[in-house]
Length: 330
Ligand code: ATP
Ligand code: FE2
Image (cartoon, rainbow, N blue to C red; front, side):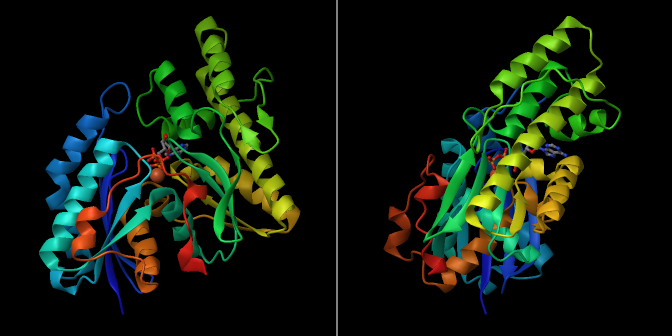
């Protein structure tokens, strides 16, 4: 039996989740938001520091456990915004030392992947579409390999940027999705897929120009945006399925909340005879439960630090998914 508490703090969200034997007992999150513009790392880190204790207590309460029940603390060690990562690490180290338990350093992107196991996916190609990251990944010979990725910005940031241009606020994903429901396709936007890599900045420029011309309805722009970039991602994922010979697709990351995106993945999978998996929204966006979930897997394999090892552990703001040594799968 292991009870692991996970702490997420890589960007805008501070989350605490509790996992016991692969089951999520709680998943509490608070998000730093801005009225206008994007995220300011130092401000987001201050937000995390302010609310951390409160979210921690709620995470324990919802799980129905006491601090003394905790076997280890997992935290998102990489990658992300350095000030935010540091705040989460400070908090996790403090608690680990106070409670005399081990500390598990988790890669945030890999946690987005591993939590997919909860849906029943065994060995999927993962389409990881979040704010800052967009990658098509699969596990092969000891590593999560990146088969395709964005050559510029993440798909979520791309959608949020366009949402800012048309003045619908942050986060833009859900708002663009609503607008798109009333839109139709405009056949003027470039389709940017090279091999299995995608690029969004050219599409953003084009959509911006179209919006500024005043000749297009925002609903049609939103619809066209979604159809274009989701088709690129689904086609890249399909190529990865063909290349690896795998027959499961798992969608992850906040953009995976999009209903149309899920539908397009499902259609492709049906045509190929593959299975499609997508976790529930609270496990798709940044959250502490996914950190605890991977933390438990790592803890059970003895991958954690304790005592003086805790002081030495540090963040790695730039660690890539394919840098991670996936020792727990061996
Ligand atoms: P990362 O995981 O790369 O660090 P992040 O923390 O910003 O990035 P998530 O919390 O996984 O990412 O996702 C946030 C993104 O998801 C935002 O860009 C938001 O606009 C997008 N998003 C949320 N809901 C939807 C939706 N229904 N349709 C499209 N995008 C959405
Ligand atoms: Fe994330």
